[in-house]
Image (cartoon, rainbow, N blue to C red):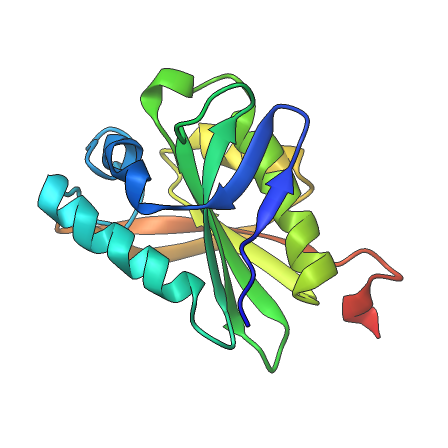
Length: 185
């Protein structure tokens, strides 16, 4: 049986997306400035509804390998962003993390806290050995979020992502599970 995930932090809560979150989901997935550095197409309301349905379907798939959670600022009901952790290689205990925030909350530290919470979840509950992320060189804000959470820059993947019909480089970042974590066993 699949149980809903709720991860509580000091200023944000990560929780499962629900049907009633469509407007908040569209705020992030429908904004070309938010997705400028992300290899996802900007969507209209119908496209956001389809994409949200995919997120909801993955949340009840067993065994679960994808956690796409809503980022909710404490004291608010509506999400202000999204964060995902994907078990990309079960054999190698490797996960990919990604995130996007609505413009109205940029610069408030929510992404930094959400990434930290999701890293702990990946190491503690998914037995990840390695969690990695990529961001474009033109996205120093995301690179700073990753660095603040202990991810290390490992290099540049040239012409790695096709975004808006243009090949873009990816900066590869990663963190390994701390010694003594379940992933080391």
